[in-house]
Amino acid sequence: MARMRTYGQPAGRPTMDYYPQEPPRGRPDPGRLWAGGVATAVVAALVALVGILIARGLVHVAILAPKGEGAWGDASTATYAAGAAICALLATALLHFLMATTPRATSFFGWIMVLITIVAVVVPLSLAIDWSTKIATGLLNLIIGLVIAGLLTNISPMARTRGPQQQAHRYPEDDLPPTRQWDR
Image 1 (tube, rainbow, N blue to C red):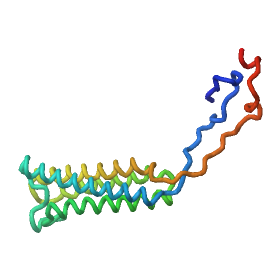
Image 2 (image 1 turned 120 degrees about the vertical axis):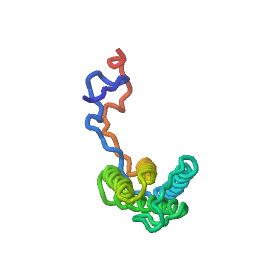
Image 3 (image 1 turned 90 degrees about the vertical axis):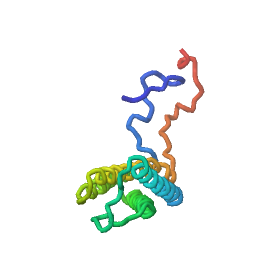
Image 4 (image 1 turned 60 degrees about the vertical axis):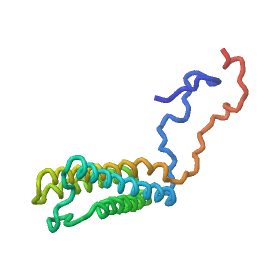
């Protein structure tokens, strides 16, 4: 139902926002998007570092597969943090591509990130190592994936240039001064 004007307008005449308007769309602003992507990469690397420190230092659980064992091999803490940062930058590139070419880019980006995060959680669970290491690594991968997806999804609307503002339709009589008839 249309919203009605309440001041200076006769009752019953709708405004022109009867049909919901999409917000003005613009092109992706690469500077803002990549600045957010670099900040997301820093956060992802720090999340990886903190997760490894908590798992190894407080809980005494190995995060990575032992040397020569499967997908992660002998990866170190720095390699894991750098990998998280690289994943964030790759996700930024994907988001930039989707924003430039796809309608509802954040919806597609969200689905792609969820599926990639599920893969990152399942891969450690398939290794032949202790269950505590599998679960800790999968949990850390889940947290890193959610952080990257969440931050990039939240910055994407702000990383668009403003499109031309749409002019609202105006009735010619809207420009007339109010009369006593309308003041009742």
